[in-house]
Image (cartoon, rainbow, N blue to C red; front, side, top):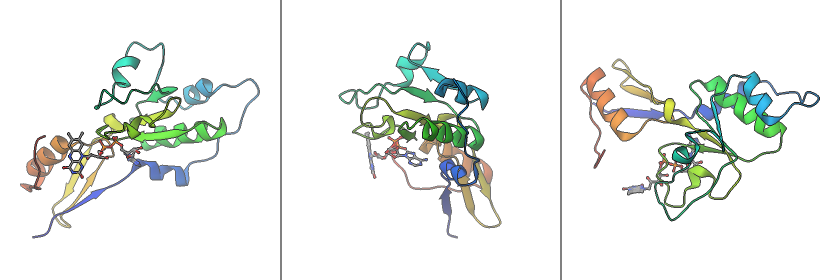
Length: 156
Ligand SMILES: Cc1cc2nc3c(=O)[nH]c(=O)nc-3n(C[C@H](O)[C@H](O)[C@H](O)COP(=O)(O)OP(=O)(O)OC[C@H]3O[C@@H](n4cnc5c(N)ncnc54)[C@H](O)[C@@H]3O)c2cc1C
């Protein structure tokens, strides 16, 4: 039987998100804070760890790195960044050789999806719905646990 893996980009939430109105004296940080978006700034303890690329030759410094846990966090981050005319980049597994998940240049707002890695397998349709931050290990283990399914892969 055919197994279909459906990778849903949580960035699609932007389509239904309400625009953020710019309040007087509000900053980008205020905007993220108002939406309770988990965020790491350059002075946050985890920032250096979070900005470390897979390929250490491609080092970039983002403006902020958000760690959303819901699609609402993703939508709010994009809306706030749009309001303040900032560049936004999604980061999935972070394995791009050129560190495109960090924007490929300095100053991006990174939407790091590592907390959004849920995998839900529907044995009736054989469709697995996969969070944007899921890695191969998450997917392989989950589809086996939930439906005794497998996909071809190399190293986890
Ligand atoms: C050791 C190694 C081995 C590899 N082997 C293979 C291989 O065998 N086959 C192969 O095809 N590739 C291979 N690659 C390349 C790698 O799979 C690709 O770079 C891929 O983009 C990595 O996915 P990622 O989720 O880590 O992307 P990231 O590095 O997180 O992001 C890559 C790009 O995708 C964008 N992006 C990420 N998530 C989303 C999202 N949810 N919505 C919208 N945009 C998003 C980012 O903004 C960025 O532009 C390998 C890389 C490495 C380092």
